[in-house]
Image (tube, rainbow, N blue to C red; front, side, top):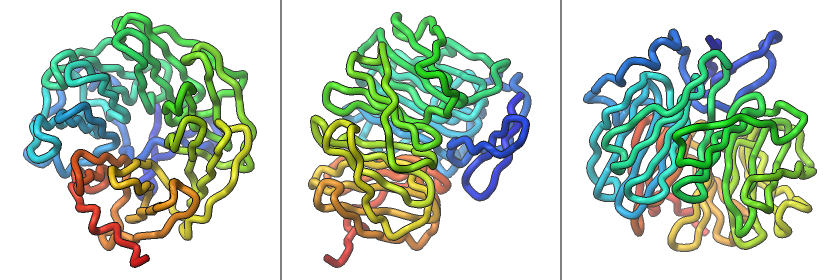
Length: 329
């Protein structure tokens, strides 16, 4: 059973020396892995519980988090229902291919699949004996997808998630935190300043040199060959050549940065701990800090309709207006 020690909003999962930070946002001390066999409990307060990721396809929005909670909305986030979920394990990532097919991943390497837009879920994989959580999931189409996680865990499927195989993409066992697409490339944001890139849909991966040695928790595509990655202590780097070279961008914060989204009005938004929100009006060339007074940490961001975006994290589901992001510029 993995041992998770919380400190503020972050969890520390340690191997032997208790010194390696795992970027599993806002996780709580787990109980026995036997909980995987139990259904997530229905809760009137599920919308306010700890939520760690959110994704959308058309009007459908799904958020996942602690205790196996999965919340779904059919009306772009205006109303929410708790789904039936066959686990109480903390869920850390969710991916929607369309308004029907969805996958979620979490602790004990649990992988869930839904074929009805998140109304019901089926567990298709778990490996509690590995003692490492999965942190993200990404699918290219209805059959081919990947799940990534701690200690270099890299799982792949070619049958829509019915079966999974494990392999290594490098000689290192750095924590793989986030997978995202940029043009024709796939990227992985990882521990120890590592960024991995695939030019063939995930079959092969190259490690890219970056000017940073701390963990990257997320990334966002900015154009066909442009992207940014971000992570510990407010560090954010931008590349205009598919990761060959990097430039550091000032953020005016030392808070850990956790997720980013491109808003429909052209602005970029980066969220982090302690109520940190960064806004860019020049495609990531510069950012302004818009400190949120609630000081609550962000796990994931999503815009669901013009003028409205959803922040999930310590405060659960929080629909916010983009008017709150005014920088005074």
